[in-house]
Amino acid sequence: MYVSYLALTLQDQGKYDESETMHRRTLEERKKILGPDHPITLNSARNLATVLKAQGMFEESETMHRDTLNGYEKALGPDHPDTLSCTNDLALVLQGQGKYEESETMHRRTLEKQADILGPDHPIILMSTNNLGVVLKHQGKDDAPSYTGEAEGILGPDHPNTLMSTNNLALVLQLQEKYEESETMHLRTLNGCKKALGPDHPHTLMSANNLATVLRRQGKCEEAETMHRRTLEKREKILGPDHPITLNSAHNLALVLQDQGKYEESVMIHRHILEKREKLLGPDHPITLSSANNLA
Image (cartoon, rainbow, N blue to C red):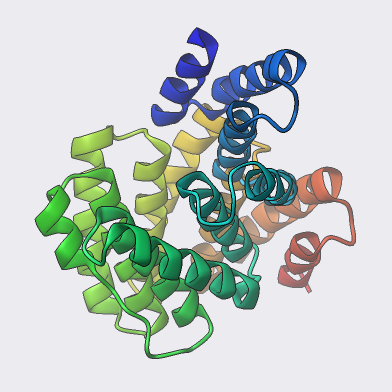
């Protein structure tokens, strides 16, 4: 039990590598003692799948979430809170891979059942609504809802769920090409994350990356470059230079350098990313092919 709590604490602190090790240890122990289909074992599997997603290991996370969701549905039923939470988690993993239609279906299923059980103003409903809103906007559907204001009123402006809701709204505004509003929301999220989580927490770095991206969209390339370099440097120290999230930061830096005509450094970074992704993902993976396209 202590190992499980420690894994969750490390996860909350953004120490994902250590948390993953602890979660794997807990999962194996619970499989041996309780069996693979016990709800407590399934909780461990879900925790591990969540920390894998946080590290950008989407394929492994998706597989584990699907297996865990099947286990929950058999052990607890389709409407149990743990089953619905796992459905939401799977929807987020699918969204992270660009599988928007299936993600939307999962989000709608979760939201409908949660609203019946918890009521429309529950904080979990507000988060589920925001998650659905983001995936709808990725598909160009303008009926995407957002409940950032309600989340702030219920939870407070610096609550992690409020900050995630604010981040989601900023991303929706960015997809609508409302860059000034998006920048304001991203900056608000970043300041809140620094205050609540610290400057080096993964969520803070994600927020900094998102803000830098929208700055680039507005042509504020020097400011975006500075922010991308800072984020990349921190991710290299915390996650390592070959981590998928670190490589995403390097990709974003290469793009903003390219926009400024700094082609030599941009090409050098793109080549580095391609080499790493070929080793990590294989030459035919869609992300690897996208990296190769950047050098075409």
